[in-house]
Image (cartoon, rainbow, N blue to C red; front, side, top):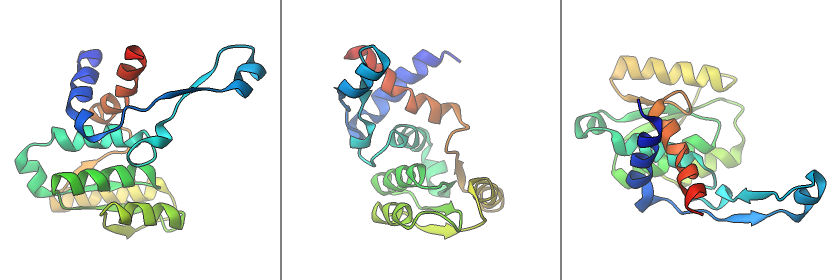
Length: 165
């Protein structure tokens, strides 16, 4: 796999759906670290985090047949919001499995973006295992929060913007 090529394809694929976030120089961190420190403000992204990049890339890469099967994912917040937004944009059915102890504002964000939430387990690992079980039994496509080269290529699109800027 040529990862740089996959990141460029991901950048082209997700471009219509995301914001190109900007950099802001941090005078405080520059002074503290004795350098020139800039932050890429992904908190201004469409879902409030960089996770939209990977989730949208994965969902956009699915075939029509896979989209019809629906998707299932697990999250403690940001990935779930990103998958929810992607499902809404693309008209894909699915659910986000979240741990019982998830922060209420994270669930609210997932729901506000159109996602269906199911609670399971005490942590993200238990929620992920449940989502994977549901994928196996229903045929829904599992959308990993991190363990998928297509997701990682989507997250890597920040590098395309870094290079451009």
